Each structure stands twice: as C-alpha cells, then as structure tokens.
Length: 213
Image (tube, rainbow, N blue to C red; front, side, top):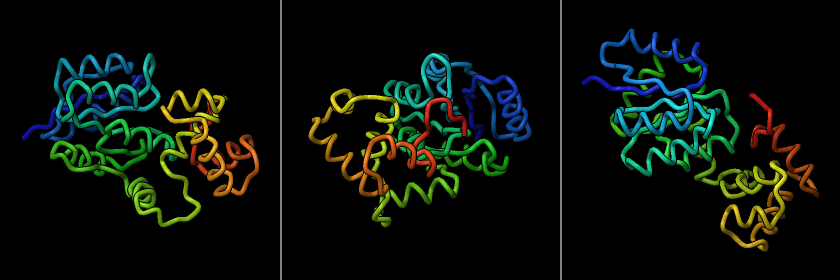
C-alpha cells in the first residue's frame, strides 16, 4: 500500500529534503506541499493525504492551529509534527490539537519512514525522548512535573497575559488561574511569575517568544 504524504513546512530547502528522502521509498508518495498553515488546511481537505507532516512554526496560522482545523474537518486525519521545537508546551499543544506523532527534524530517516507508516496505520509515532516525556505526564510519576494545564497557564504568563486574560483564554475562573500559579511556583521553587517563566524556559518546559530551539 502506498502512503500518500502532505508536507507542510515554509522552508523550501526542508521541503525539498523531505521530498527527496521520501522519494527513495517505493511505498511513500508526496502528494502536496504546503507553505503556510492556511495552505496546509486547504491542501489536507483537497488532497486527503494518508499522513501530513506538519512544522509548528508556520506563517498565517501556526502548526498546532492548523492541526486542529484539519481534524475538525476530518477527525480521522493523521498528522505528524516534524519540528525543531521540543519544549513541553509545544509537545502538549500539538498532542492536544490531535497530532498522532511528534518527531524532531534531526530524526534519522529510517525512523521518519517508520513513523509515517505507523501513523498511516493509526498508530502513534513519537520519538523515544518525546514518548518518555508524554508518559511521565500521564503517570504523574514526578511530583514536581507540571501538568498539561499548568504548562498552558505558564505559557500564557510568558506571553504577558494577565490572570483575567488567561482565565478567558482557557475558559476557567481567575481563582483557578491563581491556584495553578501557586502550584507552579511550588513545583519550580520560585516566588513570582517572572521567575517561573525564567526557570521554565531554562528547563525546556516552555519556549519564549523568539526562542528557536
């Protein structure tokens, strides 16, 4: 069975490289290339690929938003994130959006091929390092590990949002936001929002604006 793949990345060199790699496999066929998040949503609808490879940093709308829109149109759509970003907030947001896989761009080509085939079969396709982190969240086996919701709250804080704005954005109460912040401060060993953002960024939990890796 041939797996039809849509590549969504705004860098032409990256797209060319992925297309060339997939071209070495008889059962993997590139059926389209998207240069923006909006383009990815449109092509996913028009082409109905078996698997979409989605970068997170996309023009117009970001990759996670594009995934949400693609799966809103087709809940069975299979999307693998292929990115340079590996912070907890990026991983959490992509998985929440419905990504079936999450790989970094330095993934070996054989792993990429296997991940695409696995995704086409409906199986998750996470790199080992990402899988370990996701499992640790699910098991909550680290007492100081931030929950998915706490990561969302802290990410909003890093964007300069007030408690009121965070509450509206996440559809929770301001009191709940404050409770999450208290838990975040305790887990990170800090006393204020600025310190929490600084520590979280240094640990790779969140990505600050302009941070590329």
